[in-house]
Amino acid sequence: MKKSTEILGLPIISISEGMEIGKVKSLVINPEKGSLDFITIEHEDWQVSVRAIPFKKVIGIGEYALTIQTENSVIDLNEIPIANQLVNKKIKITDAKVMTRKGELLGSVREYFTDEDNGQVIGMQVKVGDHEVILPSETVLTFGKDILIVTEDASSRFLEQAEQLMGEQVPEAEVAAGEENPNGEADLRNKQIELLQGKRLVNNVTGLDGKVLFSEGRVLSKEDIINAQSAGPSVLVGLSMNVEA
Image (tube, rainbow, N blue to C red; front, side):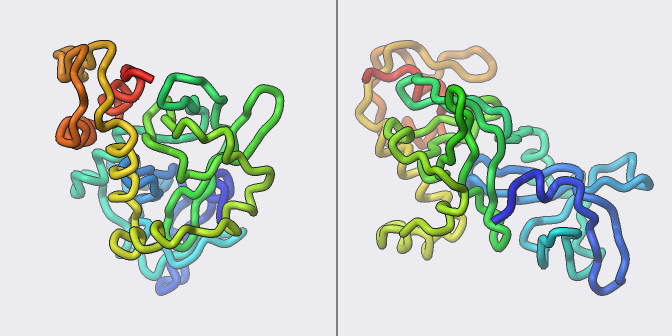
């Protein structure tokens, strides 16, 4: 388990070449999977293009360096549209507001933790009032640019220590879902469908272009929610914030 601040700024070492190829500049989060998918590189000779390392190419993240097998693991984001799209979404998690599906503001994220083996975001350090707690990522419905939407019972699942994230027992049903989809994307989407399906909208929900996608009074179907998931995190947040209790 690593804090985001423990990864940022680390030298990146190529094992095969035995050389430093740059430093960790930023962490690129995939909001659909809730995972760290790419690591961008800071290098004085790479000013024109943005280069990154897919997390699956990372060999290890130590106290003093991040290691990869070879410099060939580095990609140019301009050549990988999906990676470039994730960078442009600018999902950083830190400083995001934490809000329940019913609109209750719980606090704000101060730090987050990733599984250094697979890049999955496993929890966040959240400032609630005048103290800080640990929130497991299983409670997150939507990773948005500025807001994390969490389940209504999120506050009852606060932990005291980050180490407890690694010691939690995973229900058998979740283990099975993880075996079918290691990245947890299907599990997250199904959770969103379960919580929103059958709910009635109390306000219109619009897209980024201002057009109404879902009208006030509409009872959300499974297909509606799937369409909202495809439209992006902001639309899904709009649904979550505008349904009847």
